[in-house]
Image: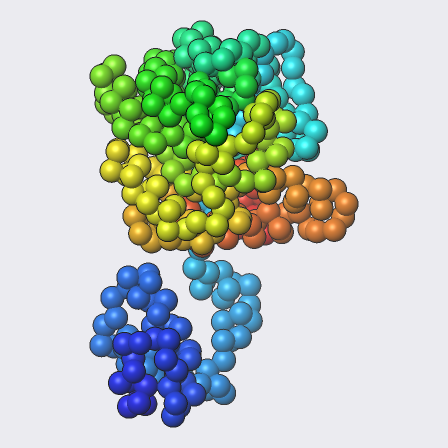
Length: 383
Ligand SMILES: [Zn+2]
């Protein structure tokens, strides 16, 4: 063991001036500290005396498919997947979303077609978005027991009682202006009225619960939303209904295709006064901490691919059931490249979904769910 490095060990950023092993040792030890893995004396000895080339050859364990499978650290399962669904007003509708090839808006009378597919593929859960016929300034239609999401939930639960139905809880699909709550005039112009939105969110959550939703997933990034919803649900007797909070949701350009799908693009401005700045990571941890303190049972990071560092930090820090949203723009890019023959879609999708698992996701909300589940059922790894 190198004495000089040993002395400097507490400061992982200082490389050893004597031996050349220090960089790899530093990296291994630093990552173990990040993972909060206990460093036992035996482990310490192994770390401090790493075997070197040519005694150590990392390629040995990559030589056979069976061997690679045995030492694989992360696995994607069908049970990890959640499929987002768009329910649209009207009749006899299965309308493909232009910017999301292979994804559709479904009218209520044809919803059973996609639900039966989801069940056949053994995907455990769906996330429901609804596009109503009528919209208004405050999005009151979102709280209607006969509303589009509420009706869809009842229909899905009667057709597939075992399927976990998660409802997206927000107002942007129901407001005429496309923002996530009623508006208020501020010094900087019109903005969403945070505190006026809270009781409305509670009201909508209780309505989803009455319809039979299994999980409520608030996505509006309002301060205090989890506490308001938890209290509303508890007062209405739904003490057992879990909340999956869109806790760290960034103001992202990757949502573009979704806004076509959910017809929820803001009619003016953007959502930067309530969704997070893409530059901020520490703030994301604070957001999650607040939601956990307010009673969130599960937390989500959205989008996925550009925010894997956030996902990793959230899982490492809180160790709560953590979801990631592989958003519409991420899906659209893969689809476009695949349609052009530029990438191997199956390989890229499976690699992407596995990356979410590696970064710490327990649940992956993805438009690729149907394809991925089919591939997983096909050969176990999907690759
Ligand atoms: Zn919203």
